[in-house]
Image (cartoon, rainbow, N blue to C red; front, side, top):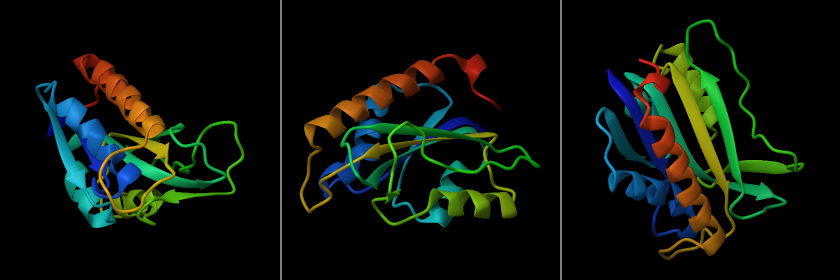
Length: 167
């Protein structure tokens, strides 16, 4: 079992959709023993494969919202222990008319599938970053780049303390 896996979802050639990859790059510059990073296209079966066997799985993805505040970070935690039922939702105080991964993938579907086939990590933390520009081309917009840096620091802080990571 890996102590933790950090999964970046996205495509670096779709501007802000590369936010998950930017976080992975920052983490890979400061490797932590027992922590694996993985790139994923967001397909539910690929997410399950990436987090199977992890005590802690952290997923970072771009989120399209209406209305949108590019760079705003959403965080949700799911208890993966058997018998626990969590309802996935975006946090925060601003009303959201609609929100979805920039890949039109519902992470809630991945969690439901993982529970059904007993492939949930002990704890699943999901970071969503509101984005604006997912057109073709490399590079993040400034607010999304700042959010990626903030998330990377938060993840590094959490993972450096082995006592904070479920096994």
